[in-house]
Image: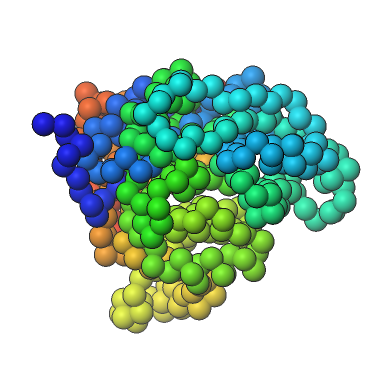
Length: 363
């Protein structure tokens, strides 16, 4: 019997691998891991994010853009040319996999921001400019969606099972030092190419198992800071919250865990340490609209870190582990063991407490 006949309707599969010393390794490892959880999907979405995959353009901003209409390519490229030097652009290499349906046009651009564009806004950083650019394209240019926008990284995703998406984008041909992946069951939306996981902004990439019932208030809160959700899937808010809290507000991951997966009020009231109690109260008051309600198990990555976080009552599974060379995160221990024969220190992640893996050195 085909394993795909057996489904877990309440579950998605997430998996992540980071090399402790920044060594590059083939995307084949993450493919094997996520495909070991194929029963967690339904064929309506899968994807991969790889870091270190573009060493020849490592200092350039890389935009992966999905077009649903050829007429919008010229409009988008005119906008890019007005703001960037386009160092290189090309169609993202794919296999002609006819099993996949409604395949959009997939393009990548390696960009350098024009000096005068940064000087126009003295207080703006390059990262701020990239976020502003992504929001403009996704919101204003019809049928054009920026899927990833970091440096030396990229997101590849679409409607299909993980083995099909991996083969379509030739993930096995890439080498990176960090990979995350997803086998998606759609939440509150139909499956479409832009709505598959991972979601990204700058060097952030997020995969999520669960459902964000606070999506509405999270989305409206983020709009106050210039982030707009256009990809019709609840997980998008998590990506922007991490960028806002970590990059803009300079908050560490442990504290971010106490914002996104805040302790319940009754738990805070029971804390004897007054300083700790007041601190957690302040976080809930100041960042209340950033609290994520609903079940979630997420893996968040950037160029230096891979972070796992569960909701406060751990309604979705998330397992961590390590061996001599790698750290791992996954929905299931089996998806780690299939790619690590010498796995040690395997453990379930504690509810509401982030597990943080940092790269020691990058090639």
